[in-house]
Picture 1 (cartoon, helix red, strand yellow):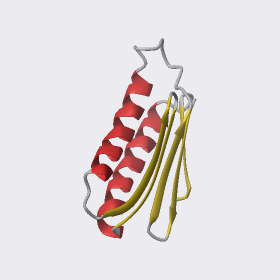
Picture 2 (cartoon, helix red, strand yellow):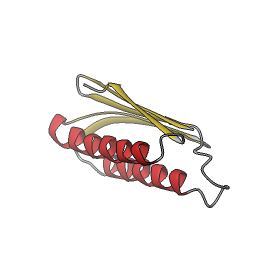
Picture 3 (cartoon, one colour):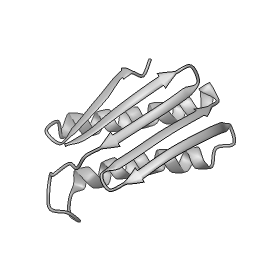
Picture 4 (spheres, one colour):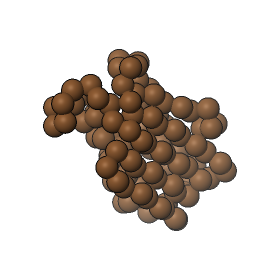
Length: 105
């Protein structure tokens, strides 16, 4: 299962994504592909966003962590888009992805 946690504290935003969906064989896993697409779209946006003042990332097999400080309006909008996308994915594949937004207020 892919476990995703979103956190927000002041103007510091975090995404932690760990695990594998195990929906299908490696290379054919549509849940993993969808989750990866959402995560890397967010990462690409943040890497090119001029209002992000500080960003750290960790990328390993089955793990992605993003922590950044940025403009509340622009960065929050990007994170909100990712949250909605991941929640829609969780709704369709609840046995393969879990999204925790309890620390994203």
